[in-house]
Image (cartoon, rainbow over all chains, first blue to last red):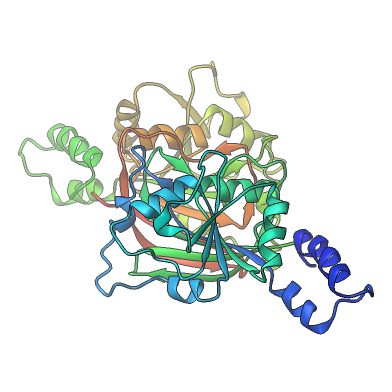
Length: 210
Length: 210
């Protein structure tokens, strides 16, 4: 079955482009490509940041070959990113060049504007998640990387995540920011891949089972 | 390094059996065998029971060959079990024969006595975790299966778990009883095995890295 969000989007997209009830082949391809993905690492106890907000533990396993653990392959299939203000500001604070080639949509009620340095790279976006997705899809951006704990939890609450690549570091942090939160309903997933990196880090690829 | 609990236990055991500071070969083997293990299944979001306390979701993945997922191999290496009252009463309530051949030690401040039907199978035990472990080790029972959320969390809080076999069912429950809780310190583990069952269920074997 197609994801709910894709089905509801297909109606509005097809009616705006084609007068018939049948989407065109091109449109059909776009619809099929719509996907909201998560790619994130957690501790064994499901935290994405430790008690002090730190992420050093992510590098507690030696990675002598600098294996990207599937990130490059993942990100090259992504049209745009959606993240919250906190994650955006965290990435801005990293002592590296801006890491994304794709547009980054920043969800925030607090942030008034994107810093001048990043106005061509990141864009404030407001509305319900469905409205936000509609706005992004209208730009032809369909394969979305949803990042940051708060944003991922909001998407999961509305059952808007289609796949998750979860990387597990073998450490119990015992507190911090949890990736997952309360959900109104159970969400079943299918395991579509399982890998081990550096002999220590497991990575499981899940697809929402609908 | 040897686990702390093993080192401290080795002093009392060796002094009670041998007058020298060097444990005998036989004693040394016993000491080396001391191990507190966890073998448990969780949802993707780390729950061991759903919001209503239910565990039906554990069987949400078809298991046509009735694969025991390593349980038989695990349990045959176990000398005794330690569990809380709640887990004990849950197992008593299962519509099956008593499933353990080994002694079951039940941690409880509330339970006054073990039901007559199980007085030769299960035993109330009281004290701090270190005292409890000493009592059990004195009986020559060294390889212990620590079960139940509350008991596992207590053991982890005192860094008394040596290995964990964690089986992950691909479902987000969105609430329920969490396996893991707050810890005073981070605990690092080593991945010593990773398997997939029924093409859907991952099982990772971790050993405490000390």
